[in-house]
Image 1 (cartoon, one colour):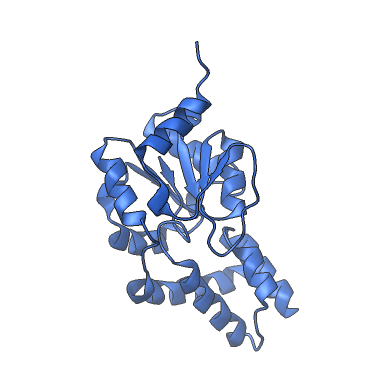
Image 2 (image 1 turned 90 degrees about the vertical axis):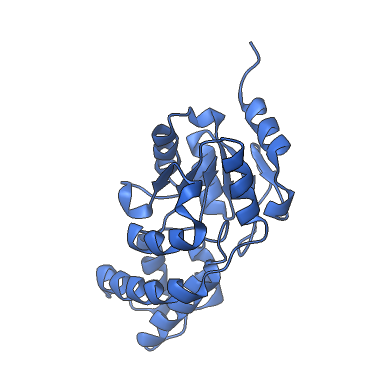
Length: 217
């Protein structure tokens, strides 16, 4: 099992919204809803480029903006993180069934270390963070790395995502995908099972998706 974090396990996209809008205000502007939506599921590099362009301040240093945002998000993660419906229960179900699991996120390690205290380290056999890969989602590298760390062929893995960016990454890696859209709509695609909530995801569904990915001898 390969779990996305922001917007999938945790309702952290709302927390990112606070930080990003505060950063825009710090720069004397206001982040548009269109630009904010374009950031969902993306990595820090792309999000800073979108924010600067949206404010008409392309000259700004992305590293400085990222540092400001990470510091602010570290404060917000301490108090504002909330579970998505069914997320904690699904993690326990997967763990109790003995299924290897990894957390796969575009968020950097510093913030993930804070978030994982909320989620619980015991649920994951591996963690892949956005600043530990050469290319983040939508590139397939994060999911390919997670499968390697678990020692499981990626074709035998099910990824759970909430955004088009994450879905693209998992599909490109070769995993089966369950999409539970949150802030951004996910269009129907081959290889993607759309779900309204993690409360509807259970072991029979996971088994069916895994079996579908493995050719019959």
